Image 1 (cartoon, one colour):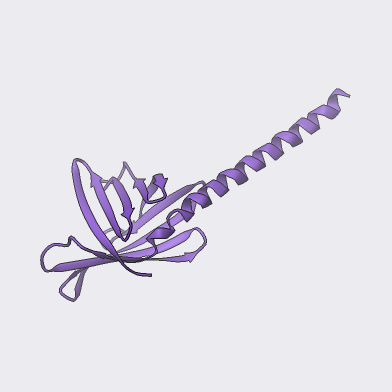
Image 2 (cartoon, rainbow, N blue to C red):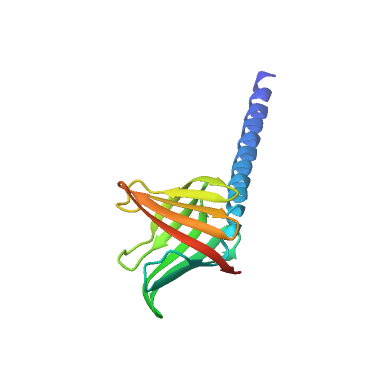
Length: 159
């Protein structure tokens, strides 16, 4: 009789583990859905004199968004970065690919709400933190680390 209880206990523990894993995955997917507001084109409103810029974001498929950040001097692009938001395992990552780096730089999502999110990579030289906040049709991205901070103010342009 005692041996029959052991397999039942093991089965119950396994089922509980599977349920918790599915719940955690759903939670990550639900968090990712909170990033949907970022989709579209955002024109930079605080660029240096003679420059302009924008970010454009689109959803590729569930749990994956691609973006591009562009800085222009007149009509000429002077800086382009490729951006990605995606789920990797149980976490969400903001990936940045810039011309001088061989591989994308990962920033792990550390906080999220309906209108804001923060991603961090304490090992990276600069920035160590990327934070976005939205207020209606305006948004602000702040990159910071090592006592330095740069603000990027945006206004929503189009879907």
